[in-house]
Image (cartoon, rainbow, N blue to C red):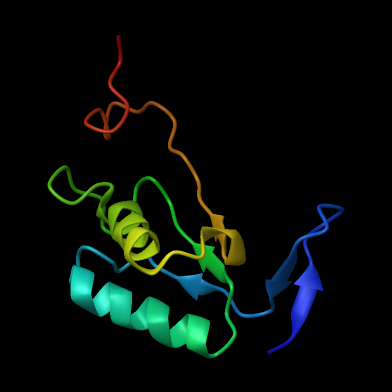
Length: 102
């Protein structure tokens, strides 16, 4: 696996990043854990996530991707060995269930 420095952070991330936008919609928690295990076993240490995953965003599944990554980290440990790049959503009338207007 090849690694690159992430800006000036001193962090080295794998040149391949595991996308997780299917966790919680197309993939079960067990399947997500198996995919994470496989990726880490191949040297991937960079995981892409987002508050609005899985895609397509729905109130019933919003946040499951990050929950699955969290349960995997809790079970396996090693949080200091993976870089999780996540994103947050802004307030929207279409996605009010994620970030409601006050």
